[in-house]
Amino acid sequence: MKRYCTKCFKALKKNEDVCPLCHADNSQATLSDAGTVEMKKSYYKGMRHAKDTFDKGTCLEIIGGICLILGAVLLYLSFKYDSLKIRHFTPGSTEFVCSVILLTAAIVLLTLGTIWLVSYRKQKKFWTEFEKTEGLKAKTK
Ligand SMILES: [Zn+2]
Image 1: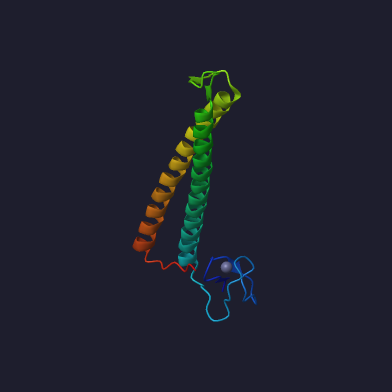
Image 2: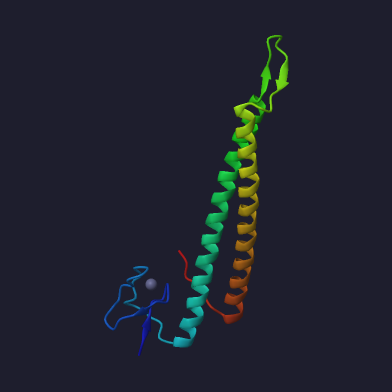
């Protein structure tokens, strides 16, 4: 009878107790019902994918946020004082060009990040429902 890791549901070799993939100790219990294993496997993969999506989304939001702040600072600096100490907007300045680039990047990154995070929520909802309906109990640390 085939044995499967109780944590990540990878098929184990005959005398393998420690899972080669997630290093879980399977000496006490292993799963052997192939049907349940397949379902748990897809659940595990789905949740992992959701987590990846969340990480990527968060990463984009952080980078986007930094771009936004730097862009705003440079935009502020692109207003320069003339000899009479009056501030003038100088669109030709390096600061302004850089701020436009940074702000554009910020908008793109923040939008993408939001899309990723929305996708994460949808995925998580789907797999949580899946877990409920299939009566699976996820073992996560
Ligand atoms: Zn494992």
